[in-house]
Amino acid sequence: MAQGLLERVVSEARGDTTPSILAELRATHLVKDLYGVEALASLPKLFPPISLDALRTWRTKDSWPAFAIFTLQLPTFRISYQQRLTSKKKDPISETFIVSPQLPAPIEDCYKDMMLVLRKHAEQFTDMRRHHAYNLTARFQGLIPPEIKIKIKKVKHIFDEIFLIAEPPVWSLERVEDLVIGDPLVVGWNEETQALHLIAEFDTTAVEDALLLEGPANKQK
Image 1 (cartoon, helix red, strand yellow):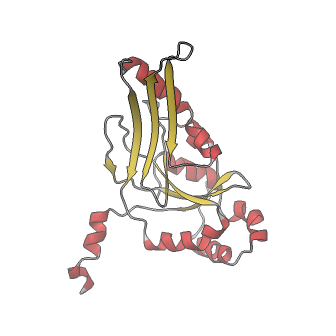
Image 2 (tube, rainbow, N blue to C red):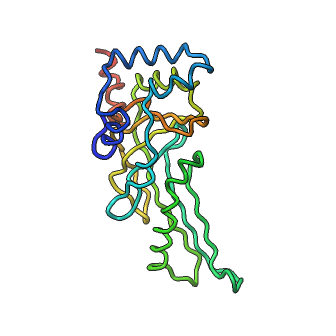
Image 3 (cartoon, rainbow, N blue to C red):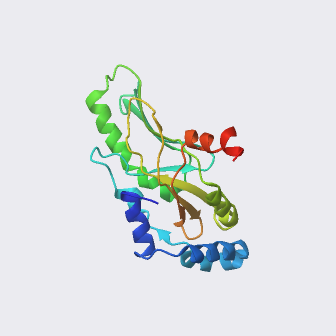
């Protein structure tokens, strides 16, 4: 289950009440049979909304984001800032700021303050005679448990997009580390309500552990 800052996100979303396993199962099966006309009214009751304030304001002691957000297709979350000199007198410095993967605008806006943080870093360490790029990157390394994948399949039709939110143990501008990020959240984005909703929380399984569980010796048992 989620720990640390993500535990606070879950607690605030649920109002400090944790649903029973039976209640979660009932909710999942109910969603499977919902028509689109029913889904919008049912979302807040079945899946607690998550405030975007946590993504927008919670930062580490180094001013980096407390959370990274991943799509189900891409394992990398990256905030890129590029700075270079131009030949224009009125605009001598060209800046580019990109958050990837592409996120819904309200979610991407939660990371806009990183442009100022990275710009400040560039002012301290950049030799402006050259082009410079700074990338803040987290890479998800782990497996989603089968029961969570089943739940995602049952509810994906009522969400516009589904993401994983995780709390990286470390950020680095110098390298991309393969991080086994434990205890992420599965969240769904609804474009009409402009809100994130908590679908599930789980413990990631390391690839190495999964290989051991699926090894020949275990299959013979």
